[in-house]
Amino acid sequence: MADIRIDQLAAAIAGAVRDYTEDVSEAIERKVDATAKEIQDEANRLAPKHTGKYAKGFKVTKNGTRRVIWNKKDSRRVHLLEYGHAKRGGGRVRAYPHLRPAYDKFGAKLPADLKRIIQNGGGT
Image (cartoon, rainbow, N blue to C red):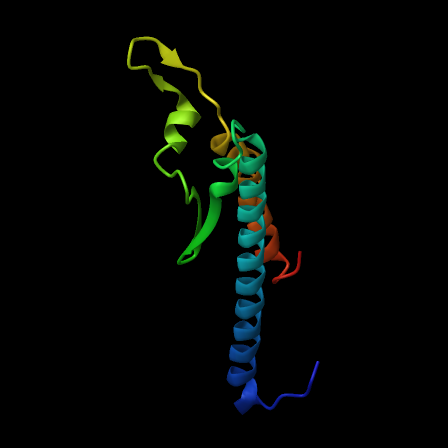
C-alpha cells in the first residue's frame, strides 16, 4: 500500500471507488452483450427453418442498459410462431417455441453472473 498523507486520503478513496465502478460497469456490459449474443444464436438455432429467412432475422439492439433480441425481418410473426395461433378455417397451428427457451437457457444464469462480477470487482 502506498504512503498517503491524511489530507490526500479522501481523494485516494474516491479514486479507488471510481476505478472499481468503471471496472464493474465494463465487465457487466461485456457479460450482458455476451448473454444477448448467446440468446440470439440459440433463437436462430431453434427457430423454424421452412426457408431459413426467418431464423436469420434475429438481431440484438441496445436500449440503454438493456438488450432487446427481436426479429428485424418478421417482427410481427414471432409471437405467432412462438405460441401458435388459430387458423382461418378453424383449428390451430402448432407452436414452435424458440425465443423463450433460448432466454430461459441463458438469461436465467445472468443475475448470478452479474452478482459474481460485482463481488469480484469486475473480474469474472
